[in-house]
Length: 444
Image 1: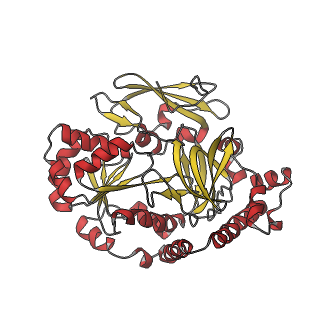
Image 2: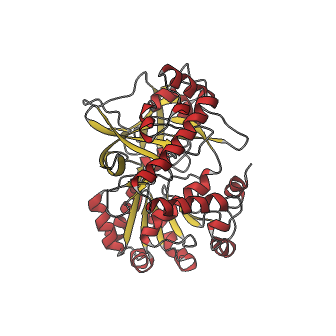
Image 3: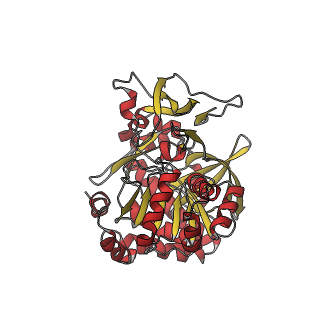
């Protein structure tokens, strides 16, 4: 196990009086991540001052390197490139990258994970559900942690965040005890968002004088709904948040513009939103304007490719040698802005939203948290996951198996810990689609 994974797994429960001083150690000096973190931060600064031609040269070298490696080491890519008569070794310029075939999640689902991977001793498996509940598992490497933080700190700098600042995190974790739990490894307060807003507000009110967090971080739908609830119910926590919260860090969903503006006004602060996903092949953020996302070409290569009248967001990760994704179709629809042949920025036309179901107590359970914020073993063996709610407190999980017959009870493969809902499970042959042919996560 790498040092970084050891820290994440074993050093999360230090008390605040130990975790807070440790958070002040700059990431560039932290064991196991300093070298990569500093290198990425340097690249980000350097590329900001590059000409477009130099940026293209940087991208070309990175994409060619991962394509050559994958053609040699990964059976999936070796077969793909041979069948398309492509040899990345022969590439000589940026435009040659267009010869690499675009791949989809469906293409990857059709082959065993080892056919599309080359794991090492430190690799570990994660899975993603995607915006429509279409699962995919793959390997990532511990080195991605430093790579990720270097870019996220650049994003959060838009609201003056420092790595020693404390965050209240509204995510989908199921292992939060006593409603609010301090995580010393990440220096954050994790919220049990399934506990109900009343319990969360009351608990935060009690602990606020001890911790004094400065940022709210997590799924926009959860944060916005919580702040709206505080206002509607005249809870005293709202005044405390207004005095102390310096910014909102909004990830994993496309934030509703009107509710976002209302929340910023209620808390008297600004926010920053970014686009990213578990696959770690694209990261983009609001560099200058809300809802306009600028991709980091130091993180991975991002493209807008016209397909059936709409632009698909295509991405390539540079550094994941365990499960490379090269010209991977994220299946998100964008409105792109190009400059000299590069994707300068984009707006999300279709992507994750704040869909929710209702638990037995009438509280909202946001699907981004429930489905994408947890690891469900059912994802590993399914092509599609969808949710339908017939009445309050009861929901049905529909799943499409990849192959064969399920040998275990599906409820044992679905993490519904800490969620006050009764789930039933139903296997279907094909995903349920709308009249227009879309595959929604929430079936209405």
